[in-house]
Image 1: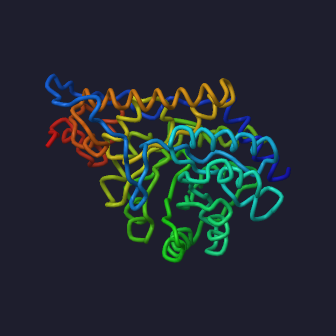
Image 2: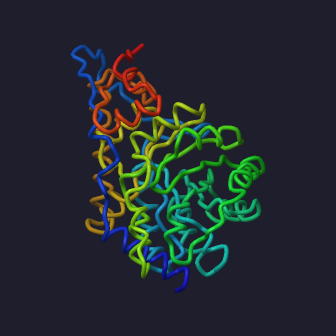
Length: 351
């Protein structure tokens, strides 16, 4: 099977397997504020990922590219969505374009359609410094995502089986690249141990890419004769992974993995994230409803985030880090046994 066909299969299986709705946000409840002392018109959505300044805390996370016209059309629509709504956009892994130059156009379209937008390039942890520079130049990227996908590669019939030296390669790229480097998981979550190790390199941010959304184990198992279905329920739920990473690193923490709506976005931000990536929900909307309706949906999400901020007494995105919340259920249990003190979230106070 060609790499391009595999890219197309990934999109089709992502649509058919859907999102798992197991990211853990149902275990998070906000403490109501009867005296928020805020005005809706004073709330703002500006956010930062390290040195990058964004007009929205939402970004479109990495999905596709390298699958011919099919993926070029999706990336074209996603880039127009990002342009019209003012959100950042990450492309899918560009290794296919580095190995097959004919596929470059399926990625380059995002910069062509959105010349002034914030765009993240994307490669795996096997990449070299030279490949990282080529990927950034291909889309004139503002940052590079390096994705970690051990479980996907192990489940993928033709996947990698050797993950030695990944941290050292990430460290070298982050030291030598001219743009910030974001390290992201692909649906299985970042632990506090991994976050701590990454914080000792020169990377600029961590995207937890938690369990609960699109499941790449299930996707790759669809392509296997003998399924490794023990990986289908593997991973750290997104809500937990945000806290794990935030507790162990001073780096900006980005949240993604099964996040579907404004309430889950605000919960993710309140747990410690500085920005929130959406992929599966946006892909489904683009494919099922089209670009115009998806633009409207994202604009409505922006409006709803501001309503939630107003209700919680927050004018700025970073203010959400101080609002009290109650954590229960499996998320509470996980945090408790991992020493992450879920009770302290209930005692927070807005300054």
